[in-house]
Image (cartoon, rainbow, N blue to C red; front, side, top):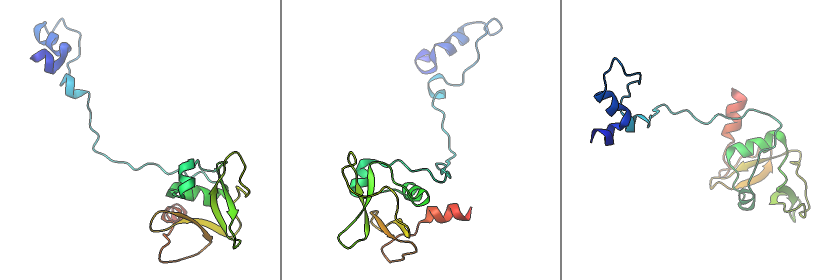
Length: 147
């Protein structure tokens, strides 16, 4: 049983002379390989300005961008190739998908507009400074601006 739980290295150490052995002592062969790190560090935030974020087609179709993607679009003022801003029937811009550049619209965020998430997590194109009970504040943008 000692070989099964402690490994061959420790079994050979126990049976051989310790003065002639050149092997390093292992604490526990099986469980020593699983090292736990109790410290948690959050994912670092990219502070590169002017870089267009990568957004998957699923996120664009369902308009479910995360905070980092919204911050990237708001700072770079551009969308990746798989998304465009298109005017709706009232002339307001909306986020839409772009497949092989067939969709009419622009990749550039219109002047005076920004992206925001609502309380359900859907992304909207709204005028800068718009506040409403259902729109969330861009906390990531505020944290980076204050840092």
